[in-house]
Length: 214
Image 1 (cartoon, rainbow, N blue to C red):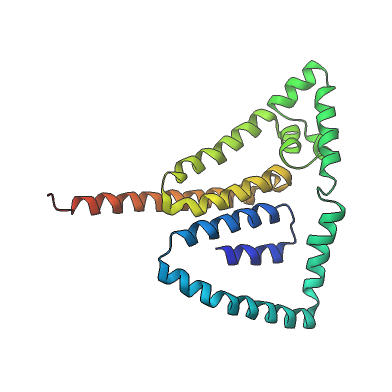
Image 2: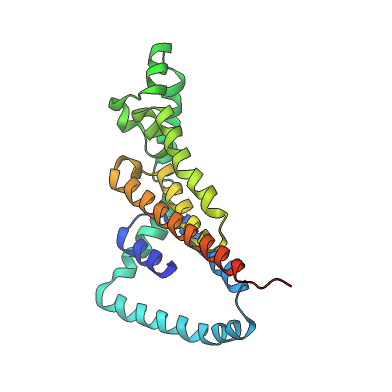
């Protein structure tokens, strides 16, 4: 899953999902590594330098042919250092100013229905609230967060929750919520997680039923 996430970053060119995936990815790897047996830990540590060396050599050869990693460095390193928020800080400042300077009828409309013609005033959380309404925004976030709480109760499904957190972060700062397939894919993974959770719970109940009493 982590490998596919990294490939997705390379293919998408998006920076809004890079930092949550990087942070949570490290956390997931460390957490999962601690649960492994001592023998398996030793094998992983033994082969890790060789794997890293192979990846570095392959990346170097691939870059010589395509120059891809130079573009990657420009996109993810140089542009991030020069403009960390991609001008979103100014957008959010203007959005907050627009919210606080409206008359009462406009504010009520903004809260319940949104103002579609303000779609160019920002991305992410505030932009979606402005154009679709802050009540619908709160409803959307509740629909996204409550399944995470439910899935977190099952240890085996928690890696999926980390992925959902990354998506939620991207929804917060990017224009992703405006595209229905984004929500469809999110809740598709939620449905898969709930199905897996149900299967794990049934498996535990079955195993307990066959445990002989003392």
